[in-house]
Image (cartoon, rainbow, N blue to C red; front, side):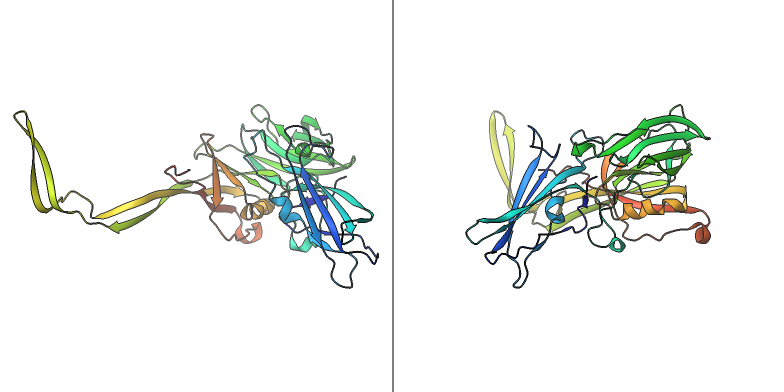
Length: 372
């Protein structure tokens, strides 16, 4: 089973101790690639970093932090993009070196699996535990008639069962893959003809995890879906079923300009001859003296979830700190957005009875196209 590096949190590599008196520095070679762990095939992405680091006086090894280097390799796109890679292989080779570059001993080689998730402070240093279902919450909602997509870890999960009233609607087998791009699998179930109220994940052969599922049939308000990259480095969906409002905030600059003309020419045709006459010291009262330029705007949507379960608080917390968020509106337009809210008060059934969240999302582009 792979050791996972979650690249939004630090991951430290410590080289083996080398007691040779001729030790000068350590050479660290980091290779990041997609596909399999073998030689890169045609068309697969791969890059390599080579670092040299001297040990502190009195020490026989060095420490480096590699997450920042690896994280630059990720370019997340909307989940339906066929070129999207959510996992990469990372091979780290360390060698002790003499001052002239001669290798001391045999060195080490370790391969990791990198995903653009994060660890929490309470997890400690280099937390690498693998999830089964790559969603923290054990409760989800979905819009009636839309497909449910569940991201699972193929190295742990064996089957995914979709159920309704205790009856199995479908059973999906999950198998491991050596391809980095297949380490996170999205198991899908259509609800156009089947209602789902439970999902059972079987992992590590015999262990199970149950996810409660709630179907929402919203017939009054247009439904918006938010897709975001969660703490495990997988795409997760949240639906906002109730009232939504859209607003426009404009940005512009102004300057005062002179519209005064010391000589204003006027051309006119007299017979077959074009003549020009001049008027002196005038200005046109229809012209803008206070001129606007660089005018543009950004649209914001305020969305309401409707009533949700307290068990979904983890999903809203992870949405708050996600770096990749998309909105799919009621017309199935997919838009990149940024969450404007900077704080979230967790709601509970004890304190708040019925839980509803209101969030504001800013479209991540200007109203007037200014891409150059």
